[in-house]
Image (cartoon, rainbow, N blue to C red; front, side, top):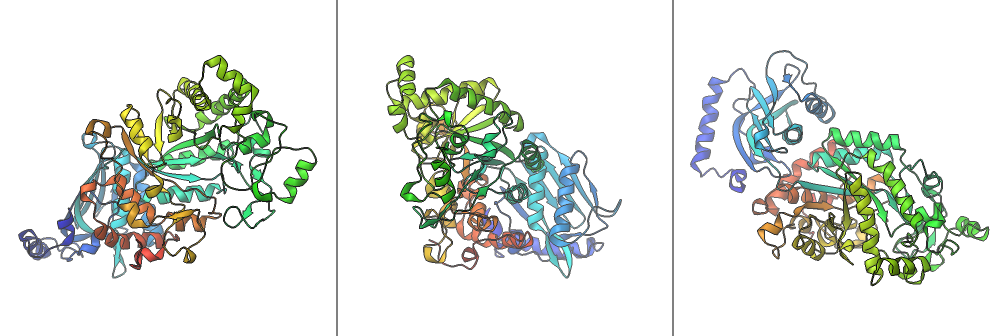
Length: 568
């Protein structure tokens, strides 16, 4: 693959290639571009296709192109929209002339596609609508302007992804992003052939989804009275009320929008930790409802101090971190609440999965809670880790009864793993390795390679404020989600990988784009392209083509990668 893209003119195949250009000139003079000498830079596709074979000439996209969409009208409309939005060119308006055809071939695999471009025709063949959509994304990246006209260099591509799960996460709980911004995020994912959107909807700092049976979750839990200024522990509190939530109708709209782009949306309802916002709305969910919420280092907003003085003990958390006030594992009312929440969340999401969190749950309150101690005695649980396992397994059983599976962060391994759970391994790969050895499915998302809230440059003073760490594009690109410690049979349990975008220090969409791009391109190629075919220098060269798409979409991104600055 790499040798093809290097265009070595010493190879016999390329002597024939250029001889073919001359022959084509006389045989195909009905097209303006039959003799175009295509260059390596004409094929800048990310992620790298499985097989790409250049051909002479180019297809002219214009108003005399007819589109034969068949069963793929929606995918054809995406192609028309891209030509119009990116290049202000109308296509698909003719009943004759050159053609773009869409067809299905289930034998090649659901997400696979074949794309053939000649000066007279573009043919797209997908294993399903997903494969057709990915072919359209590749075609979009191949489009370029020449002499004021929109063309696609001739090429033949056969392509399929390495992993079935290629995910990107977004935390909308620390900072809220509105419906239009989430849709724009999905458009960015679609360009990179990402097929899963992990939507982190609840946290200590905000509850973001409407639950009709519990209106205070959004009346109270969706808003905080202030936020710390600067890096934790902060220099002050901004004393500004902030927040927001999605109505169930808005959730349906976003899920439908994602579905049209063949992106599965997995909701995350965090439990049993990271639950301050829900507890602020319904204090009985805490082991100790009468104890006041603490914001460390006296960084609480003036409004929250006033509310606590007036008798409202629980507030939505205003700083970042891990907090002892978690869902009480000893009260049945906690499980009734969470089951009711799931009853409203599950019907909104077609995904087979619900993410239940399970990470960073301190046990201090459970250790001194009479209800939790009673639960442990009744269930024969040895310690609070087993109590957490009981909590997770009880919720898993209920979610399974609704026809769904759970995903949890790797802490759900502690105390015994829930029977049907999929593990998302974030504290390195160890949790994922152990889960795979136990026969559980795994999604790899270790902090060292997949946390896009880390700094992108070594000179942190020149970068926007981030949570810490250092994760350049090259390191993201170097990741291989299949650990050497596992056998080939155990590798089958590694479903894929995911990038995580936590938003403690990402208050607006412009900064979100910057933290995401172009690192998303790197993780996309990790998930799509075979590890043996990856090549950092080749990837970096192909990023220049993707940069044009970023500019066309008016996206913000880290310039230093494209400027060949030192990033490792």
